[in-house]
Image (cartoon, rainbow over all chains, first blue to last red; front, side, top):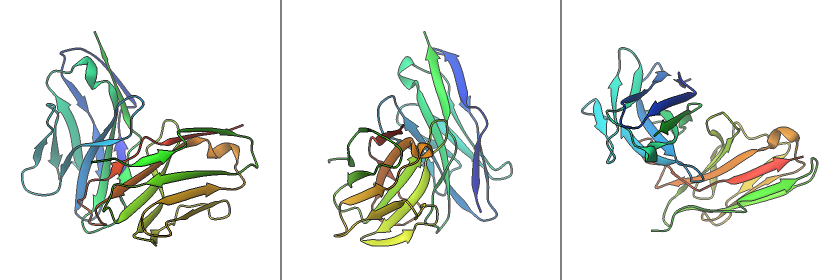
Length: 113
Length: 115
């Protein structure tokens, strides 16, 4: 069975600094990978996803994640964060062709002025 | 387009009481999910419907939880009787179909506190 580990429960960072939120997965078969974001008092929404093709995927608000099959990782990065990026970020995995998405425990990103 | 609607947003009940949550998915979405999110944890799938049929309910505590999606649109999740450990956010979500690459769209959640 697949699983997801988000290595940091909280990441405080100053505005305009770079950030990396780490995600590792475990699966014996090929997977699709997702990052969802939950802003305060809102539901989860898709940030970006990797299905196939280029291993580097980007979001519209400057985040990017790289699928690394050898390290079974899908870390999320942003070169310069804003206060508005404060949110909880969830990494998720689903087996290719499967029907059940597994979510990590989440990483709370707190951007300080 | 309208998102996933859930109600009520907040509910406080005493243990052993019952509670029901309602969900209206995005129009045209065949797949509907109920997740439980306990504080500090990621969402855990309770049940997944494809139209009005159950696809996966392996993690639904069936002695106290039930869910239905009678006409393949709206869904209701019921807890009876509630326990203290049921305190969580109950997230309803939907996707176009069961394809594994599809985006899952979430509602804002129903916060349950059992006292």
